[in-house]
Image (cartoon, rainbow, N blue to C red; front, top):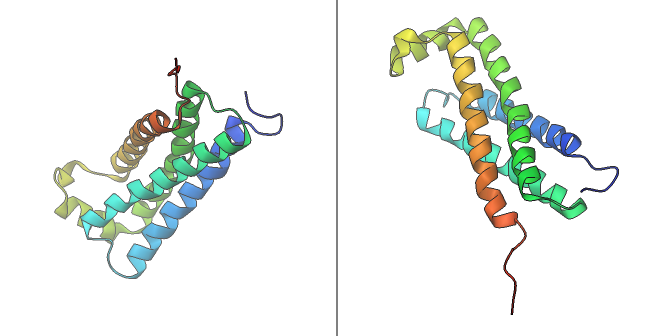
Length: 150
């Protein structure tokens, strides 16, 4: 159990908002410098998510006792708090930037089936699943050893 003033929710909200703001800043920067159409650069979003979840888990572990499933939950919640608002941002952005949406439809696989609703859902779904998987992987490293020396 964590100390009295530290909760999973507080840590998740803090680092989830950092993830969200970082994703928005990275997206707008890529748009500003004209690199948003290079699809491979979108993969860097994963590293933003990874760094935010890692910081949340290590922050909580330093300040409190991080149990295994609690850590997976913290990481997943952090990722969801970061990614869902970003998906909402993208939803509204795609409505405002019709040319960008047209570019996605023209260049993406299955683009003809894409619309802002589907893209926002896919971003939220992919980010949520990534958050769970990243949290699971990180907790393999951060968990307390169960080995007993003889």
